[in-house]
Length: 196
Image (cartoon, rainbow, N blue to C red; front, side):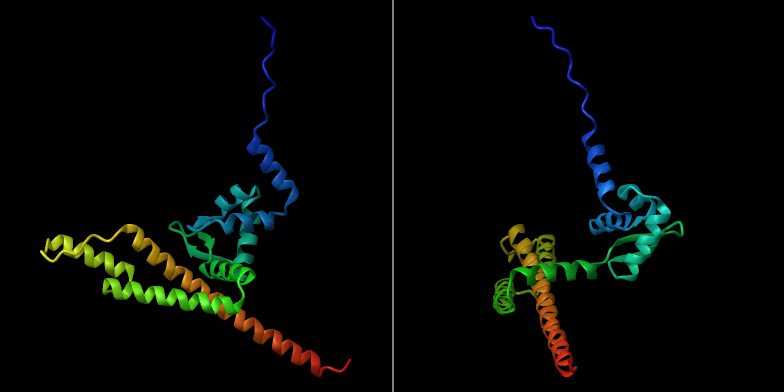
């Protein structure tokens, strides 16, 4: 038998990582990070806890982020303000990510392909949306009609919804890409007209 002593207690890994995050970032950066992953309205106190900062500091930075359009505010039940990531900031982030990886020419091609796929879904199922398809299917099941269609695979409905969402993001990316070209063009023409 060997005489082994028990291993030293490990420090709480989560606490160590949190302390490192706190020491390497500003309160603003931590609050922005927390809100970037907040899709349901939460209080400033909740954001402050997650961001390891004071509620007063959290409110200050959350209000700045709201002014910038990154955060959306709603009144809470008790009269306080609740905060969450704004849908617009998500769209812009997704569009920027698409533009980083896909050229505008390729994006135009992909948008056309997605539109064609949506047209195929509409033709195949005789409805304009996956929600309408689900409602029709439910109504038919409730009526127990003899002309009951085959049950639609839930995966097909998910794919249709995802395709529609992806098309919306692709359209937003294309719009932003086109707008950026105009801004760059305007900037160059202004720079060209200014004598050196």
